[in-house]
Amino acid sequence: MSGIYLKKACVTPETGHDDVRAVVQKILNEIEAGGDEVARRYAAQFDQWEGNILVSPEEIVAATEQIPQRLQDDIRFAHDNIRRFAEAQKQTVGECTVEIVPGLTAGQKQIPVDAAGCYVPGGRYAHIASALMTVTTAKVAGVKRICACSPPRPGVGIHPAVLYTLDLCGADKIVNLGGVQGIAAMAFGLFGLPKADILVGPGNQFVAEAKRILFGRVGIDMVAGPTDSMILADETADPVIVAWDLVGQAEHGYNSPVWLVSTDRALAEKVLASVPTLISTLPQLNASNAEAAWRDYAEVIVCSDREAMARCADEYAPEHLQVQAADLDWWLGRLRCYGSLFLGEETTVAFGDKSSGPNHVLPTSGAARYTGGLSVHKYMKTVTWQRATREGARPIAEATARISRMEGMEGHARTADIRLEKYFPDTSFQLSTE
Image (cartoon, rainbow, N blue to C red; front, side, top):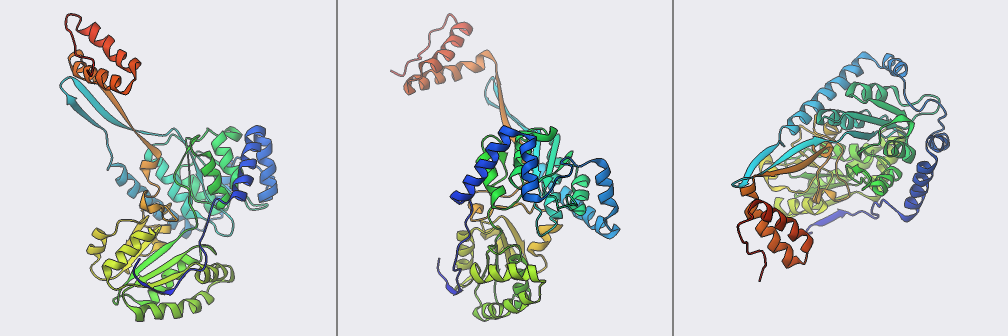
């Protein structure tokens, strides 16, 4: 990558360490063998929770009563935006039928999975937006049974705003479980839950590792690492806005990388100088996260021109990619590797994180090179079918028999032979490749 580093990361975020994998595998094995009782034990150990696991309708009503009307309105506003975008996504993939050769018809169907498990992180933040993104999208996709779990707070349970949101978005069952035990409950069908066909949602390294281990037995959206964000800025950008956008993403966690790539060295230096001051104005916990992320993981790079900036972005393949530069249409057409793209000063990653509509569950750690984020398509299976007349089957059977024999798969060849013999008994066929 051609460019000058004004600041370079001194460490690299990693997930899925061997010790984490061993711990997670042990917990999964014990919960699968011991069922509900073992999951409860881990809930008490890790979340200090010994209350109800399944959330009751009465608890949802009580949670709703704790939510100020203005916040309810904001959550509904965000829910409507996310739902509308998901509905538009769903329209982009449909069913089709085509006659491949005369007499042979094939088609494609879109079938939603039957059961989805949505994980909503807890801990230091109340992740209302993750509840919106995962459950709303599953509902639009047509998933019949949607379960959700989130870490309960000692003596409280799931944060009332998160609980209200999960119910609003259409979760059929909600459980007071976090971490590996929450993932296991949805995957193994504990506490009366349906066994999930797919597990979705962000989480810490233990949640990510549980999904990684279970992948294959169930589908997953992706294995997510720490969230990351890149800004591409030229001389037209506002250095104060650029700096705040970097700080806003750095507060996610101590190991959340943020990167600035610019053609304007003066702007880059202004941002580099101002970020520590801006961080110091945050509340203590937020500032602690942002300070560590900026110190250890942040990078500031100066490139010669916009094409070099674009190459840098494609190489990093960031989860979030902001463009604060001239000629936004050029960037939209040129950039290729990102989870979600934010064009212009008038939008920012926080909009996408919370309420603008496109999903915020996105590929991290460079995975945007080969995949996109959570969408209705992740909850749906594209399956195919075919049907033939006897005349239509004839050339297919002849070609199948010859290809199969060339491969050495005589049994395959004979499944074609027997149809030709039945449908066309008075005709000889060249079924050998010789």
